[in-house]
Length: 477
Image (cartoon, rainbow, N blue to C red; front, side, top):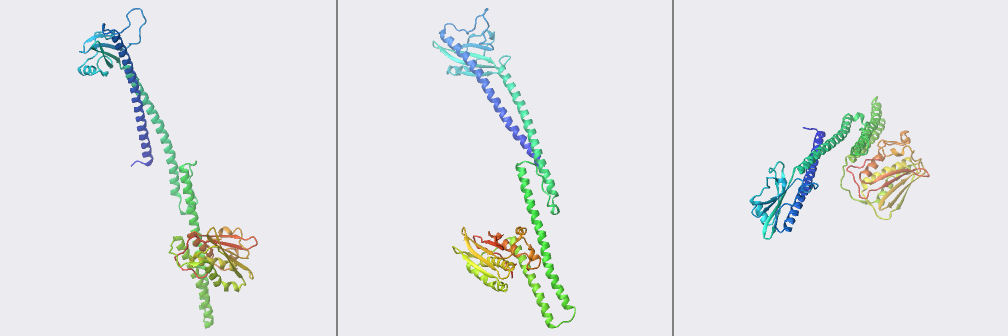
């Protein structure tokens, strides 16, 4: 089995050879037709001249019009031309001196065509030393039928066509060699670049995803392909790195409550205790189990969203009613820290949403605003419409976000400085989960710092109701 490179080169040469051969053959044919037409025209002109002379004499004296012998300069009009005049029965009445004792052929088919008044062209390959081309022109003088036959050598025409054939063949070979060499060089360069790309691609594994395919240079199709593949490798590298971080962070988050749970149980079992001590220990263990359950549920939800598992939307509810319900649920949490949650309904047209996913996202955002707000402050939840799309914004009066942290707020297991310092509890999955829900269904969440201080989260709801195939986790981070 020939390689793709050789098949392309052979196909290229075959196509070029066919095209050049067809072009050369057509050119040679056109040239041969032109040369033969010129010879036929010259023979016919001489024959018509003899016919005119014969008509001028009224047939009184039949002879070939030739320059008389003498000291006059030689005539070039009849060089290599043989002239013969015959009557209606094919008898030779006159002929040119250069014919000598020979005669031009006369046959029955020719005579019948001449009798019908047709001008007859013939090729005589074996009549004399050279092939001849002959024309026979009929005429009638005083009721008598005559025919003037003029023949000329085909040697010059054949030499011209032979030289043209050699020239066309040489040009075809030279052109074929040049185009074939150029095609071979081009294919060698092309497949050389592809071989380099294939060799580097074989070397790239999970451990060295930072490597990239070699760029051949230039903005051609191969360069565009390499750019596309390198961009794909970059996405794969980012995805693998994110998966590694996710696995490490998930392991860490799972290890911490399990370690605390094991330590609590071991300390409780070291010696006999009162029933009250056991109750306290069990309640502490229950809190850790609830944290683990919450973490696992959020991880399962993220996994389902990544896999694209969806279901048909549930029963829809008006957006303002859902906002009021979420605010009522978090009222007790806000009251513990003397935080006033204000709702500004600026909707210009009704909006229906799926209360499950939208409620989960709204609870996460509002819960974060309450957690990070100082005591005796205010959280403002604004509901309005922009370009026919429902928009929710939640603004708090807390310290806001560090500029260095803004690009990572929606990363999984990302926790800000206050959360890492232990001032606020959480796994760092709430915002990542909320953003994943919105992006999976055409919405998005944006975050920014307010000019007067505090964070501003803006939720752009998708144009169609959204839903996901899982139960909402208990609690929000």
